[in-house]
Length: 348
Image (cartoon, rainbow, N blue to C red; front, top):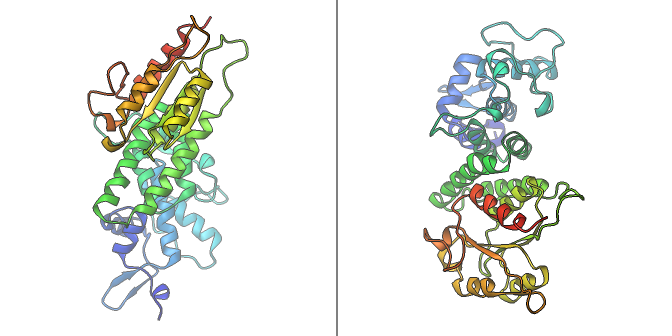
């Protein structure tokens, strides 16, 4: 019998889904979400169909659905689509005949019931002080499963419900850090997880950044120029800033990662920005001399030279921030507030 036919052991399934083996055994014991067969010696082996049921449980749990309710919905959907499927074993009443199953509906239409429904969507709930938001845990687990539809759904709902700043600070960044730590501690095992999550974070942030711009009758303001240092390949923080500016209907120009010095200085002179945000993730990419050159740059006719506020941001600059004369806000919210005050100061 081949490996695919034999199925996967519980530990491997747990790693695939991003949950603990104890959780999987609990779901089997309490709700009947178990393997369709066992090897001699009582070793559990999970078939692709069994794993699909567990994956559906994980999705509903990430959305705040209670495990018992999630199990009823999963088994009801399985019975409705699979002739001869396993019977309902979850304590409590089964869903009414003909009722829509949460598993079979798009995420935004999945029904909620009981106390969970009274509290509203899980994404909108404030976490306890010091606690990890449930949607952050759901996001990390969906990324470990390489479940792109679920990752995209959680990110969209987080931005729509919390706004860019809180979604970035409380959901995206903790999940990115968690996958980064897994990658750092296990070689290349979780590179694909971080890449998938980063791509979806970027996609959602860009969708916010390109929303309708400043109203036509609003006072004109100079744009914010966003760029990473010449040797800096990380740009997600810049994309979060662009999304925050887009949310506030403030203009920006995004140059992205690894901008050469000449290109950066040329862009400053051509655009005449109200502010320039320069990102450095690592100390090795923090080019202090280039920041000074940007800070000293002026443009415009003689006697009316313009000059931009320069923000040297990112951990590469250290706790003291950038070189003298540059601002170094320590959070996305403070950076956006400073940028907004700066570019709107002369509007009118």
